[in-house]
Amino acid sequence: MPVCGHCESFHPSGASLAANTGLCLAFLDEDGLPKMADLYADASECPKFVPLDRIRTKTSEFMSTDRNLRLARGFDEK
Image (cartoon, rainbow, N blue to C red; front, top):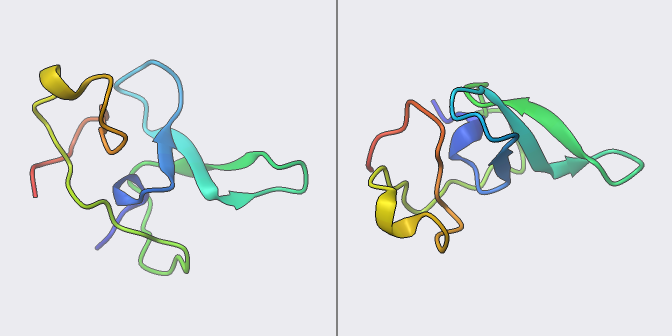
């Protein structure tokens, strides 16, 4: 089952690594603001879901350069 956190449009919100919420940039409201999304929400019905190519869990060398970096908990290497 794909989850929102595995989508290229999902960005974690805030600095807390334990937060389960983020922003979905695929869906914008009338003011152009992104929709709030849950990290583990089911994305199997989402028409704009684009899976990440790779999720890295060894973050030390990729902290500032990798746009696919996910600091959220619960992700494994693919």
